[in-house]
Image 1 (cartoon, rainbow, N blue to C red):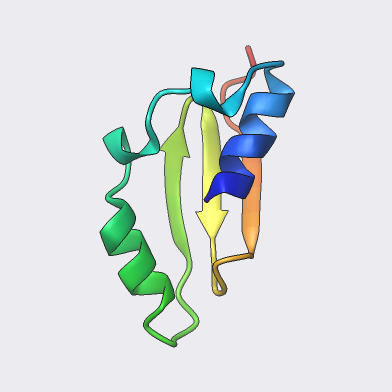
Image 2 (tube, rainbow, N blue to C red; image 1 turned 60 degrees about the vertical axis):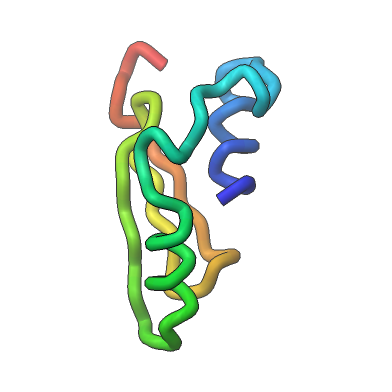
Length: 70
């Protein structure tokens, strides 16, 4: 997940620490449980005007702008 936050921060010329906590949008324990389940799960959520899709592996991360003002 840090990869997604790193990409979003870089796109907005921010430090990752300047972004709101990710746990306000997604439960990190539930996300980890889904991704570690061994299936081909994809998890998607919106965060700060971006669509983030993680999976099937924890290093497979896609970030897409959904708020065109970003």
